[in-house]
Amino acid sequence: MLKKFTLKNYRNFKDEISIDFQDIAGYQFSTDCIEDGVIRKMLIYGRNATGKTNLAEAFMDIYFILFGRPKNMDMGVFLNADSAEETAEFSYVFQFDNKEMMYHYARFSNYDLQSEELGIDGITVFSCNFSSNEYHFENLCYIDAETANTERYLQSLEAGGETEETMEPKLPFLRWLMSNMALKSGSVLMQLESYVNRMMVVTAENGIRIRPRAANYSFYKMLEEGKLQDLECFLNVMGVECRLALKKLPDGQYELYFIHERLVPFYENASSGTLALVHLYRRMFSKAWDPSLVYLDEFDAFYHYEMAENIVKFFKKRYPKCQMIMTTHNTNLMTNRLMRPDCVFILSGAGTLTALCNATLRELREGHNLEKMYISGEFEKYE
Image (tube, rainbow, N blue to C red; front, side, top):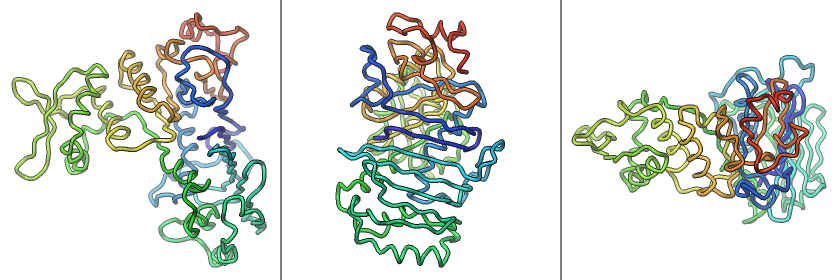
């Protein structure tokens, strides 16, 4: 699990910003937001342009460190435009079994890595400074990688790591280790790889309606192979009462329908909220997997407030151990019967993130109306 994430000098986040998933209060309500002493369900409120989407991309940056960044990546601004510092810094603290792993790295840009460091239980396993050519690999035994041929890695750096596919001048040593070592099953690096590979970002979207039919072919095949009823049940639980049918057309393609007295084409007639639900189902529930961390960016942009509550309840029940960060503008979700003050955060335009329990001098209790307090300006100092 992820215990703490820290970011600095990335896009609109000039100063250091951290999310400590272990920083919880002793509330005895909405305990299903917490699992094993770690926040598992978190809500983030922020005005427009406070960086909620940038924060999502920052969380996922480690995925591209470990598995390689896609060729057609976002080439927008990387460093904070008001900072004189040359790198953005990312730090992740994980807990795997009884070991605490810290991975810290700094980048000049989307492609150019300045340094990286891995630690286990406070001991530096390796550190690489690509700018000064300083490398330390003395403690690789702590991750069962003492047989790694580090000279071969250094030679690859001298030869130049940039390829047409990655465009990276410096190959992260952690990725090189995972690609070139026969890791033991259950090792801390295997657990890290598994966790990061199961991280994902889901953004609000109802644009599935305009996608070409061919782009939906794999989704239709999945529905045909047994998921159609599951999708129908999901929509019904969310408050969309409907029956669905899937038909194979003469040209081999598929079409999804609402069942009424006659079949009604689904995508041409579904509401924005229903389409957004299908997009969410497609990303989250259409495959058998166990997500580790999911960042849902403005997940309820197209939902009625009751449907948004149903989504949160559904996530709690279906994925109790998954760490979920949900950004929203919906103040109806700011309630102790669904969340709790140490799991609801305000993201400010200045790049600070503050839990509601730390955003007021009051001792927040179960009887407090968090939404009313928010609307009345109780927490505006932190917005």
